[in-house]
View (cartoon, one colour):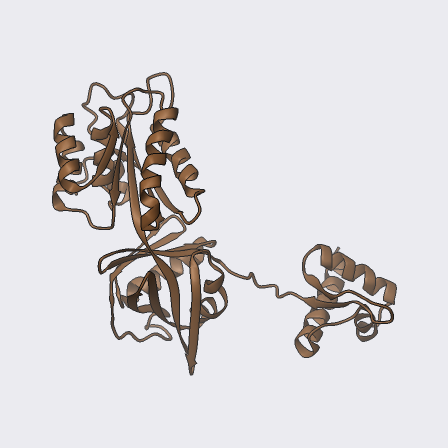
Length: 367
């Protein structure tokens, strides 16, 4: 096995070298340069095509042999999605990475740099960064400097443009990977010495937070599962970016609870014109799938959260709230609600939007 791997690496290395030097190669060239029979070179070529290590560049015609090109061993991108939501001058940037290690690296360096960002946190492999429109000065480079920084955020029409200054590995991500992420419309870069500065263009979307509660009974259903199903359902709509699903614990002293008294919160990024359809879809989906007639949803649009909403969420973690209070606050806060008594917990879910998981899951932690 070791001999086979060594031969494979030798042949693939030669294919990559010729691709870099000449743009493409033929089977005969590989056979001649490595000193193996042409039939052996053809067998290896066929095998590496199947493994997607090399690609057919031009099929053979007449006396012209087929030409191939070698692919790099590096992944095309680790940046799965990059998108943004905007609420007046407040912007939230979402960067979903395929690597938890890279997500941790970016959180660490973006957080150290500060720059145009006021908060940087990880939500699984999703990096969530908030900042205001504007620009700052920030240096990047070798430690103790951060390796990357968002130095400016601006809005131009329906686009958000991030200016990212980078050094080392982040420069490769900026020049080679970010443009391939879903949600990115364009990336323009320029290099000055060993520093790369790039402009990342994304749509200025709106944040949609949906709270859900009271969809189960003692014998059927689970609100967290139905909420996640709704996240997937709406997330399949064109142009909608699913963001996250969170569970929050409310007061355990409520007699009507089916178990521990939890509610769910799901988040999306969407264009303004899509929001009415999302709300209708959410209400219809929950009404049709809920095991309980008491289901309720609450929909909050935007990044901001008034203090009265947070106070309501805090109260729901320790006290009983009647439905009239919930309806009154929802109307005053511009939050759409639908359903029965479940709107009490659903409104609490969107009121707690932005709290960390430890806070959401432990009502004893003050907010």
